[in-house]
Image 1 (cartoon, rainbow, N blue to C red):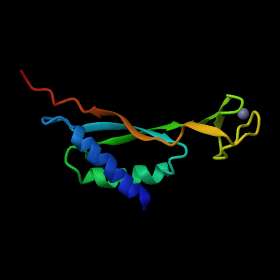
Image 2: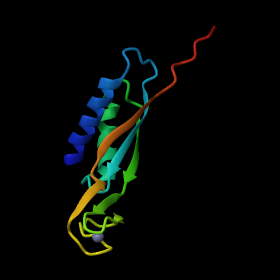
Image 3: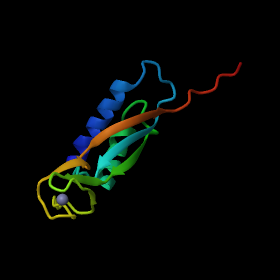
Length: 121
Ligand SMILES: [Zn+2]
């Protein structure tokens, strides 16, 4: 299952970015997923939960996914188009001479930590 190794990579990166002292643990991992990244969101979320549950500091972590549309720019007519399907053809002029601007990324954008427990003063 491809998503299992992707989820493991995400968690490895999160752990690397945790501050040394993080008593509250991780609350939310924000992720950008391009429509053309090949990731199945439900599978990724499931895998993330399975691995996070066994990872210290990530037991309560949620995965928040933001989906990035596939956007291409045509090199012939310079039109920028958002595509619903992965047909890399300019809808304006029919050219296949297009560049992909976004839609293939898989990127952690933000890691939110839980508030540390309030101490009685
Ligand atoms: Zn075009």
